[in-house]
Image (cartoon, rainbow over all chains, first blue to last red; front, top):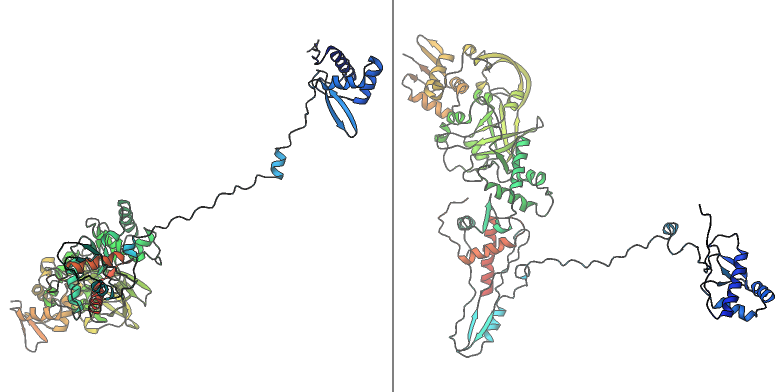
Length: 571
Length: 50
C-alpha cells in the first residue's frame, strides 16, 4: 500500500522569469487536476489560463504563451474546435495519447483480409524432344540432290568428293504400310586427293522374293541379335522394351498364385502394372511382359497361344484330372506319335467332331490326334510343352481352361480339363463338336441335345478299391450307339476291376482281357466284333482303330474270317 | 520361329534398316510388317536410281 507519494517537480526551460511563469502555469493546471490520476491529461483553455495568470501574477499574455511553448516536455497544446487548450499531467509530462492503434487489429483482419498472394506465372516446361535425327523427316526428292551435287562438281581431278551414307531416316506409321528412305549426304572438299565417289549403300533386293523366304531370313538373322527382342512373331528394339523390376516379377508371380490359374499378359498388364487396355502403350507393355517373363525360365512358364498369351508358374496345381498322372496318360497315347505325320498343317480345319470314349470321359480329356492338331495352333515357343486354351460351351454358359499337352518323342499329346463338363452334361459315347474361333486360343464346344433317356451305364467307382459297375443314368445328349457302354451290351463288365497297370500298358494284353470280358464264349474261345472290341478296349486305355486293327492282325491267338468278327483262343 | 539356313540372307545394311525401323516404332512389329518394309525399301531404291 502506498502511503506517501513523492512528486518531483518538473524542470522548466528558459530564463528564470519564464521558468517561474511556467512553474506557476503548471501549478494552476495541477490544481485543476488535483484528484485526477497521474497520467490523465489535465486540460485548461489557453485563454482562461492566460487571463488567470495575468490577473494573479501580473504576467503578460505573450510571456505566458512563450513559457508554455518553451516547455513542450511539460505542456502540450491542442485545439478542439476554435478553442486552444493547454494540456499536462500531474507528473509534469506532456500526455501521450492512449488511443489504440488502428493500423492493425483482430477485427480489421476479418473485415479486410490480406490480399491473395499473386504468384508469378510459371514458365511452360520445356518439352523433351527426341533427337531430330530420329524424329524429323523431310520428303525426299529422289535423285535430284545427288544429281545436282554431281553436276555441280568442278572438273578438277584433284578435288575429292566423298558422299557418306549417314543413317536411313525412316518414318513408321501405326501400321507399317509405307517406309520412306532418305540418304543424307555430306560433301567434303579437300585438295590433293584422288577422286572417289561412293554412292550410299543400297540394301538387298527383295522384290519378287517370296514373303516366307524373307521372313525366314529376318528371323534367322535377328533372333540372335541382342539389339532386338522377339516374342510370338513380334519384334521390338531391345532398348525400347520396358523393363520389369524384381518387385514386379514377384507381384506377378504372387498374383498368378492368388488367382490359382494361368493369367494372360493383358490381365497382368491391367491388374498388376495398372496399364489401361485403351492406352497407347498397352501393346508395348504386353510385349514387354511376354519378353521379360520369357527370360525368367525358372519362375514362369509360357502356356499361351499367339492370340491368347497365358503365363503360369510351377506352383500352380495341374489343370484337369488327378486320377492319373499326365506322364502316364501321355504314355497311353504313345501310339499317336506313330500314327500322326510330322508335317501337320495347324489351324487348317474349322471344326472337329468327336465321340467320347469311356477312358476320355473318366479322365475328362480329349486326344491330341490328327484332327485336333489340324484344329489347334502350334507351339509359340520352340520349347513349349503345353498350352492353355479356353473352351466355351454356349449351351451351359460356361468356359473351361483346357491344357493341351504337346506330344514328345515318347508320349502322345492330349488335352485335359473337361472333367466337370463331361460329368454334368455328357456320357461316354456322346457326340461333341469343337469349333475354332478367330482367336487361336479360344474354341467353342457343342453337344447335340436329345430327349432325356435313361440307361444303366458303366461307371468307375474308385472310392476304395476301384471297380466297374453299372449305374442308372439319365442323359439328354445325342450318343453314338456303338460307343455307349450299357449293361445290355456288356453285362459281364459290371463285376470287373480295372486292369493292372502292367497289363494295361500293352495293347495286346488289353485286347486279350477285353475278349474275355465281352466276348461270346465258344468253347475255350471268345468271339467279338471289331466295334465292340474298340469300345471295350477304350475303357482301359485309349486305342485308335488303326492300333486295334494292327494289334488284332499281329496277335498270334486272334483270328478273323471277315475282318469284322474276331476270335481269340487263349490256349 | 522359322528354321535357319535359308539361302536368302540380310546384309548389314538391311539389319541397320530394320533396327532403325524398330527403334522408331511405338509398338511391336510383326515379321510380316518387317518383310513389307524391306520390300518397300527395295522399290524406293529402284525409283531413286531410275
